[in-house]
Image 1 (cartoon, helix red, strand yellow):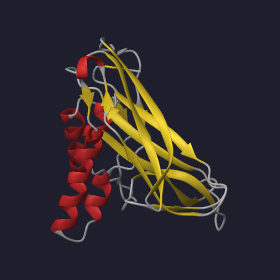
Image 2 (tube, rainbow, N blue to C red):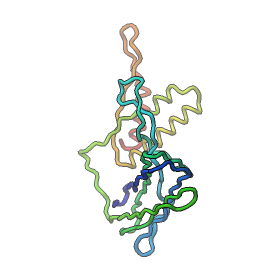
Image 3 (cartoon, one colour):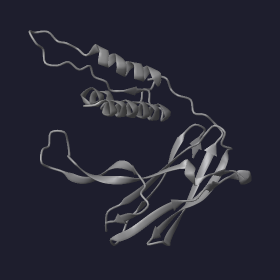
Image 4 (tube, one colour):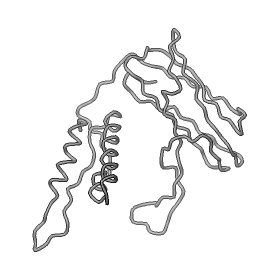
Length: 212
């Protein structure tokens, strides 16, 4: 279920008993009360990608394969026997969405043939959730402005600036109101620390822009 203004994930996992090729997942529209519908294009469909990661910060030369990143769903994928393939679709319920129960399906195809239908149901509640101002939701975050300061050219700097804007917007829309920040300074010379206050002010301006 989801309230107005919420993002809600619709998830399921495929556990392949054999290696599989040319797997495709398609979502239908979600049909609601009185002919209302949420189109399939309203779903942001992704999958959980496996990456080689370190078990902790201090480990060196030790890696393991773990589900880590939400990636856009490709037109088809190959699945490995015994390794979960998690499908993660997200929908944002806009304030003008009629309340009620919406139903649809996700269809899994192998080499062009449908092999499984998965029923989906989403209940839209006619309420807006209030924010508890006493609670802070923050993220351990490596700020793109750090990379922007190291960028070798104008194109790269603008790319990092745009990335920062989009990520702050996304965090704010998902209810976050804080991030971790640091004030950098190079090693002291002649016993004097030189903090990068101008760079930090740019970060603070961006936080203010999105209500952090």
